[in-house]
Length: 293
View 1 (cartoon, helix red, strand yellow):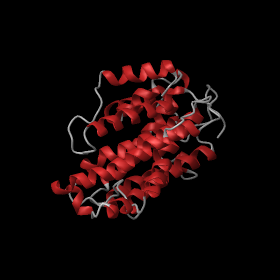
View 2: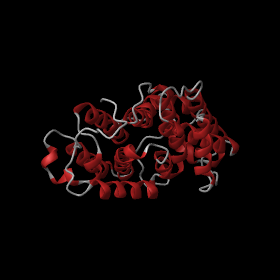
View 3: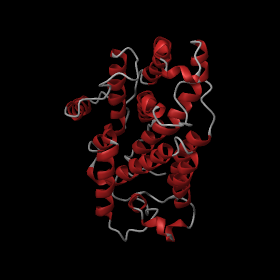
């Protein structure tokens, strides 16, 4: 996909009949409610490209909703993700799906759509794939989801160097996977994939059922600490390069969440692992001004 950090964006996937402004408002509201972090980071992007970023992040949110819907009943998640798979298919621009607000904003050139399809495939693997065997498998998944998403956001903003944004998004994805463990395990009949791979569990003499056990908390914390260390490693020597700061701010958020988790002894059930809603935008503003995400 060519750089789109200007007003000359490619033709959207869907039709514009619903109005670009209405579609942008819809995406902003969805993100404000359910993906506050990415909502805040896109506010640091230039105004002309905010609608496309909002649509990209809302597409990601819809994919994540599909995974959540399939936590206990994978078929429900598969139905939701298949809807988006069909919406990205050639010829779908003339269907009812093309009227979805997300699709009225996203560029429709083949290379961009292929990258959206890759993001979707990574989410489909959450429903259909086996448990993670190794920490390398977890890292690969984080790069294919959060990493690819942030890199695509940087490309939309016109960046030529995408490695920094990809690293920021990967670390943010890993932090999010760690924070999601309690929510996944409280889902009755959960059949999805946790970010604690088999090799780390075996090294601590754990099985899947032990993750909930109080008497195994120290061993479980040791597993979380290794995943968190991998996230920190991803951010070592983060290169801002020519990238707009907006997608790189995922690194700021990842570090903040990982610090909270470390302070809690890597207990995923500890209270207050989130960030102060008032301090969070100030933190992002400070790091953006320094250009040190």
